[in-house]
Image 1 (cartoon, rainbow, N blue to C red):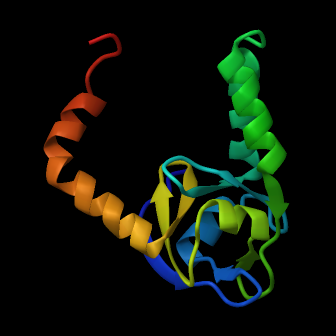
Image 2 (cartoon, one colour; image 1 turned 120 degrees about the vertical axis):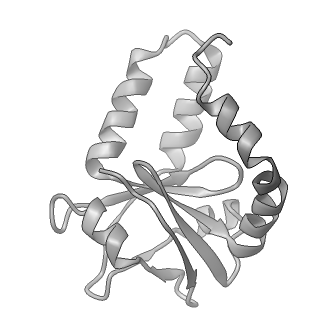
Length: 149
């Protein structure tokens, strides 16, 4: 599954967001199956298909259970993660505590990021872009360097 693209959406008073059709189609391998929302990185939320969420859990299970960061991440991530259902209009309803954690206002950006969708507050995303986009070539070069370099 490959998720790409950027979409602007509004959050209604019930914390519902209309999920773009390309994301719905790619994330819904099992119709009616849950999606999982969890804390993301850089102040975002991450939305995973059930399959991808299970793969992430398996990868974490392969890490050392005695490593303090592994234990802390597992607690913080899985304790906050929640299963969501798409409603008949293709919307998800965010848990209030996660919307607050990510500082989401009325306008959000949904980003396809390879195997998951990130939800960003619109202003935070614009600030992130302003900071990182000017260094795109440098970031790309580092991202494709072999590990250990």
